[in-house]
Structures are given as structure tokens and as C-alpha cells.
Amino acid sequence: MAATTSVKRSIRIRESFSDRLFLIGVYLFLVIILLIVLYPLVYVVSSSFSSPTAVSSGKVWLWPVDFSLRGYQVALSNPQIVTGYANSLYYTVFGTLISVILTVLVAYPLSRRTLFGRNAIMMFIVFTMIFYGGLIPTYLVVKNLGMLDTRWALLIPQAMAAWQVIIARTFFQVSIPEELAEAAELDGCSDLRFLWSVVIPLSKPILAVLVLMYAVGQWNAYFDALLYLKSASLHPLQLVLRSILILNTTTSGSMEASVMVERQQMADLLKYSLIVVGSLPVLMIYPFAQRYFVRGMLIGSVKG
Image 1 (cartoon, rainbow, N blue to C red):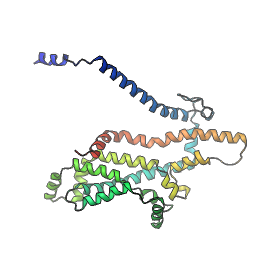
Image 2 (cartoon, rainbow, N blue to C red):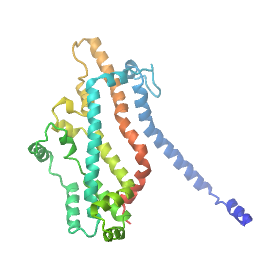
Image 3 (tube, rainbow, N blue to C red):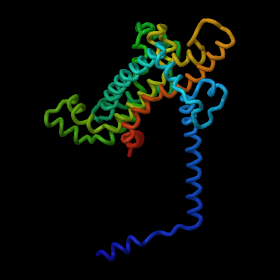
């Protein structure tokens, strides 16, 4: 038996020269793609740790030049940026929570064969992916509901996405057998109890996908805030970043040449510092959701 096992281990499929050449080409291509994707990230991080003069003069290429934490000091000491950061965290946490709850409450019933008219309801949901009411009707709806210049304007209008509903519905259809629901019903388990005690614990992959999708969308969204919010105290970090980079409103006062140069240099440095600071929450979420992300996406998007 041991001899047979050793013989099997010694048997290897010999690759031809063309196969090896093709494999080398694939690896070289992937390395090139990795460098193309990785270099901008390294450049942004290096620029955020460089001095304002080095960033504005274009001296930063790969590593930080004249190492400095001034960009982060200014970013974290600016009350406008701190308020925007706190608002973005608020919108992301509560917006993601509301979106995931609504998506699960819609997707799971649509996955059950016993729901009357589920195909018609699903058709209307898919219809919203193809046809959109438009910006002005949406604005009027938000206005008539009294949500203008309130936090609800960023939490409710975009609370549920049709694509996420489709993915979650398909996952429930594939992963939650009808026999399991029927057995729970025979034991006297209500639908809500079955959803909470059975479906949710078995749906960690798709929940991780939904959390990551909604959280990234909420964190990066700024257009709705630009439309619906007037009070600066409600602005998310994205609008604050817009005012810094486009409107250049971080400083005021004298418009002398030296002040204008220093102002522009600091704006250039803050651009990279805020990119790093603004990306931290998403980078912190992804490692916890990554183990479920691929599985949830594959099961939820392909039925078979």
C-alpha cells in the first residue's frame, strides 16, 4: 500500500514547452496588472506622508519625500472635516442597517414559492432597474415627504437597490430548501421566527455581500447630499472633500501671493490625506466580509 502511494506521488504530468511559456506569459501579465493597480495606491499613501512643497512640486514618485504628518494633523484638527467624517460614519452605519433589513425582508418572501404574485412583484422590482422616474420627480417626492435638509434624505430614498434584492432572492432560493421551511411550519414555527432563527444564521455569505455593497455605496455617495442637504452640520465627508478640492474653501482672509501658494499646497496635500482617511472604514470592513464575499456573490448571482 505504501509503495503504491509513493508511486502515485512520483507520477506527475509533464508540461510541454508551449504550456510553460503560456503560464509564464500569464504570470507576467498578472504582475503588470498588479503594478498598474498598486502604484496609484502607493503614490497616494506616499503623498499623504510627504510635505506640502514636495507634493505640489511633483517630487513624490514612489516613497514619501520630506516625511511629514501635517496633512493628517490639518485634516483631523479641522472641525469641518471631523464633522463630515462623523456624519459619513452615521450615514454608513444606519443606512447600511436599514438597507440590509429592508432587502432581506423583501428578498426572502419573494424566494418562497408559497407567496402569491411573487413573479409580478419581482417584475416591478426589475422594472425599476430599467426605467427611472428622473431627478426632478425624485426631488419632489423627498420634498413633499418633508425630508429635505434632514438625515432621512440620505437614508430612505436609496434604502433598497433592485440588484441587491435579486442577488439575495436567488441566494435564498438556492441555499434555503423549501423542505426546511415546511418542517419548521409543521413544528409551529412562525415565518418571522423561521427567518430570524434559521434563515439569517444560514445566510452569512449574502449578508456580508449586502453589507459591503451598501456600506461602500453609502460611504462614497455625495450627490444626494448635494441635492437635499443645506446645513453644513449635516454634510458628509464627501461634500467637505468637494469644498476643499473644488471650491477651495478651507481657508479665508488675505489673498496675497504667498498665502495663495501655501493655500494651494495644503489643498494638494489634503487631497491625498483625505483619500487615505476616507478609505479607512471600507478597508476595515472588507477583511471581515471577504471570506463570505466571493461565495455569496457566486451563489446569489447564478442559480443552478
